[in-house]
Amino acid sequence: MNTLSGQPADNQQLPEQELNLFVFRSGSETYAADPELVQEVVAAGEPTAIPFVPDWVEGVVSVRGKIVPVIDLVGFFGLESTTTYNRKRLILFAVDGVEFGLWSEQVLGIKSYPAGLSETPLSTLPATLQECLQSQLRHQEVLVYILDMNKLLEKSRQQVAS
Image (spheres, rainbow, N blue to C red):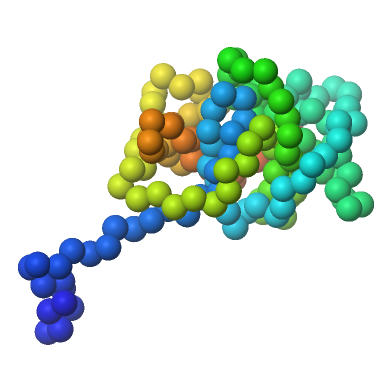
C-alpha cells in the first residue's frame, strides 16, 4: 500500500468484495437472500389452508405460538417444477416487521461468492421472478437467483389484495 496516497502499490491488488448469502433450493431452482432477514429454519407440518387466497399461499403454520403465512415460491413465480416438490424445511423470514415462511427442499446455508459473479437477471425469466430479483449469479454451473425480499413481500401483498 502506498501510504502517501492511500492507494495500493502497483504490485498489490485490492481484495475482491464478497457476497454473503443464505442459499436454498425450492423446486428445481436455487435461491439466495440476505442472511440477516432469516429468522430460523424449521421442520413444519402441513399448513392450515386459508380460503380466498392465491394457490401459492399455502396457508399458515404455528411456530412457537406465532402464526406465520407460508408461500410456495414455485407457484408464486409461475414456474414449473421439473422435480417432485419435496418440502422439507420452512425458512422463516422477517422483512419490515412482517414474518413469513418459504418452503425449501434443501437449505445450503450461508455461502460467500465473489461480488463480481453477480449479474443482471435474464430478460427471459417470468415477469414476477424478474421483479423480485436483485441479481443472479452463476457459480460452479449452478444459477443462483438472489431475491430482493422487500420486493417479494410487496409483490405478494399486491397479488393477495387483487
